[in-house]
Image (cartoon, rainbow, N blue to C red; front, top):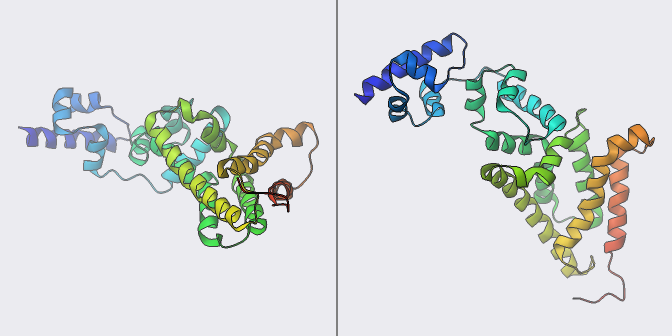
Length: 261
């Protein structure tokens, strides 16, 4: 019974999708002449049906969705993002959108990896961790700036979501962000601890040292558009974050009178 029902559902779903629509479970079940309960006995979810049909998104759909999501998140935030609106503005069907990103958690994870500074900074730490803080830390700051501003489009919306919207997201979305943040914070904290132990940096809790590094740079990045527009800020962005990092390095330099503890 179930195999025959499954094939009938697949045939009808294929026909509906071929017409260019984005049919719901109810519409597919109705076309196949089965109940929604029968549909879910044959397929555990709509996504499982699409996977069985092997519906492939058109070329460029994923990039278009991510670029549109970046703009929407920048304008209204991640919490307010509607997957239906995203599909409409990215000019893809809901079926295509959910095949690419089964939910907001998957979309947020891709936005983090595609547009946030976390992956570029992780790469720096993995490849240049033997360099001293006075070399590596300014380069980290410049990499963050280039990631957020260097492509010609502002990516501050993703940064705002990482810092301000995590607590309002679903557990799945929160976990995606936490995994990315834990990785980069852990690597940076370990790097700073090693240089504190070697005597090149002032000894303090590594998370406090990291907060004192990130804080001024984050504030500059978030307020830079306003400062340029209303206050006439004309200093180059990479130069600005480099100067802020140099201030941090001076504050973190271990003096002759410093003691451990």
